[in-house]
Image 1: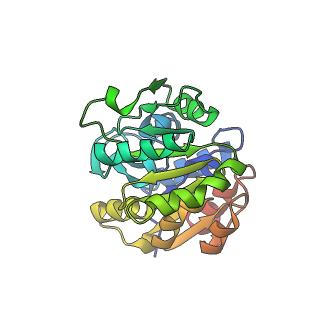
Image 2: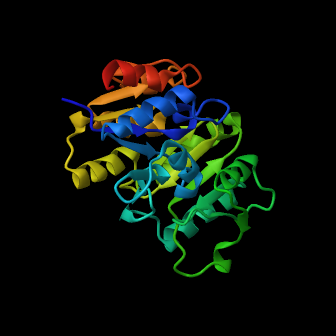
Image 3: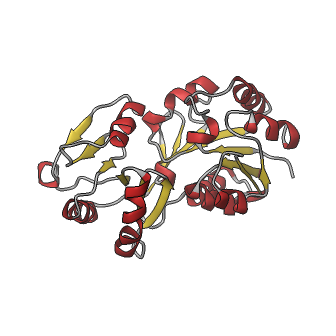
Length: 269
């Protein structure tokens, strides 16, 4: 069956280690778009963190799509929300109390790409998230925000060794009620229990009347596994984690060595 949708993780997949889209990748994806194949970025980032890449690829308008916050929002490239699953104020407060009691570094994102934290010594990964969104950081305690304030995602951040020590405690506290994933060495993310990239893609596939066999997905990390498990053709990047490669149908070259373009030319274009 031919591929009608290409789903792409952003960091360390679509982007090289220099945070650029390789010219080979750009050329291959534009060729796919010209053939009528949907190109869908599936990222833990919010829309503001990926919209410049959408523009660079020519993925625009209400007939193109993007999956953000690891699947919490399914949107058109123009920003029309098709599916929204986020964390309510009570649960947001519970998460903040947990991290503050343990002096963890964290940030949360609302569904409008804004970054919030109550940390006064702000972690560099929170700063990076805000920079990616072309935004600042709101330093706020929960009581300083509206009583109906909700979040799309919480991220506990820090150096790998620190998060290695935190990870099990976070899962013990939240994994039964939320989607908790180690999204990379420096991020433990907490989201609505029905949120992951696979669920986001399932929602979009239903809207577009596509089967899983008509979708190819590229990724590199644990938060890409639900997406890999859903699609018919899962491609792990050569620079990806071992667990991503184990879940993939194919393993391609690295993000710095034309991995996406090589697979697309072999299997799709």
